[in-house]
Length: 449
Image (cartoon, rainbow, N blue to C red; front, side, top):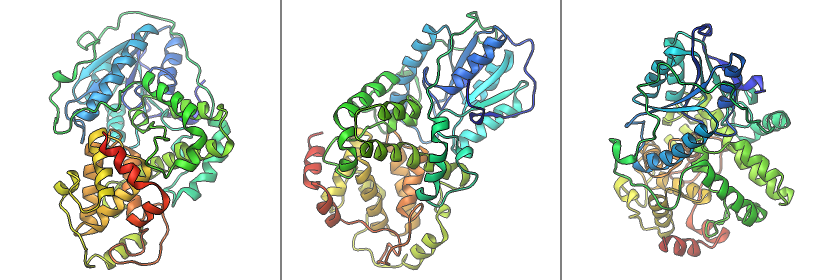
């Protein structure tokens, strides 16, 4: 059984009695295991002895996505389709706008099930499918441990205000998910025009300004392999090395979580059953659940999450007060993208992002703070950070992306002593990097890429 708090009815329309299958419109949770939306669709289908069809809407111009993102996603989808077929579930690709694909595919369905996305356009697409479909549409929340509106009914001020609300609910939601067998395996009338094959990347008309990377392979199997390796080799030192970018002692789960290729439940339960010390487990769970789901809370309850206006009033005011402060260095977006600053540590971080699609979280904070310091205005810095973040990171365009950029400017943080340019927002500098980590070893690591 799926916890009722994960299930959201999006319309009041009835089940289509003549429907020949239950449709799961997969978009956010791109996996064939530990997927509450998929298992809910199977449960409902089995009630009526109907088959389950999964459809994925594939558009060439997904907002801010480029070849790097598509390559990773398609690798994962190929695996998803193979696994679904083994489970006796029909898997289909519909080319076009995902909402259009879901509406068209659902015309012969008894019921449409969708997964939940937290960004503005994701919510709008699901609302449109619910409005324009003639049958019941149900959304099932599977990419967080604690459903967002169960954890809180408002935008949280910072991690410390969300943390007790999350922990209060952990035992209830941190539960394994059973895999259901499908009761019926039949042809799906009305879906004949859809493809059963995931297209190759060469067949898509994409933004190819940023190419695929060799450092990450998409898919659930690869995510689980990396997770196993992290738990075996790095979890024990995670709490000590979380601010040590010269090491590789991080899980690197963020790209897989972004595309829904692995469930946060899978990760959390594997970590909690490991032999690592409780301190290490707790440090990782704090990042995986509390901090990550703070980002979900942020974008869900803050409509302008991608605008400078989303910042708390104190942060906007202090940055405004210091907007005219002299900047020792100023760089254009192009100079930032090509690692052409005076700072070798910042340049290394940008190079890591550009080459691998990834950056150690500690360096992400430094990277962001320096763009604020070296831009003509805080507003321009905000735009620059989001644009570069979403362009190069495999996990760009994620709730964590928007929360991370907003953090640079004071979101989910407290006021500090005022400084030029930064005002009362948190300050970071190269001297701090030298004190806290072996930053030269990090630069050397990047140079070997």
